[in-house]
Amino acid sequence: MHSPRLLDHFENPRNTGELPLPAQTVEVSNPVCGDILRLSVLWDGDRVKAVGYRARGCTACVAAGSALTEMMEDQTRAQVRAINREAIDESLGGLIPESKHVAVLCLDAIRALIR
Image (cartoon, rainbow, N blue to C red; front, top):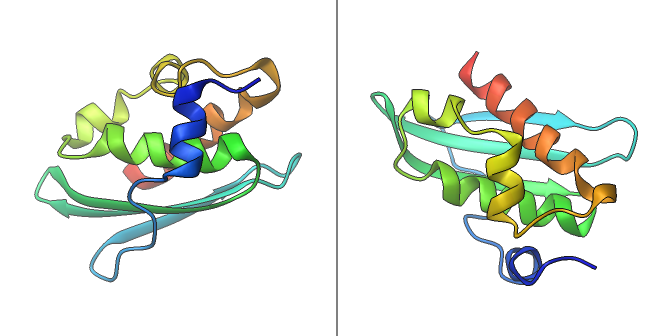
C-alpha cells in the first residue's frame, strides 16, 4: 500500500513537462523495470530557477519525479547534489520495498544533471 503523500504526488503531479532550451535535460532509465525519468532544469547561475519532469513507469516513478522536482526548487547545485535516497523516501511518505528503486532512479538523474 502506497502512502497518502506518494498517492497525492501521483494524482496531482507537480512540475510536469520538459523545459525548453536553454534548460538542461537528462534522461535516465531502469532497465530492469523499464521506468524512465526525464528531468529538465533551468539554472540561474548556481541555483535552480525552474525544474520539470516527465516519467514513464509505475505509480511510484511518477510520484518520485514530482517529489524530486519540489525538492530541487530554488536549490543550489550543492544542495541538489546532497539529495539522497532517504530524503526522497521521506518526501514520499515512505516507499514500500518494491518501490525503493525509484529513489535510485532519481539519484541517477541528479548525477547525470550535475556531471
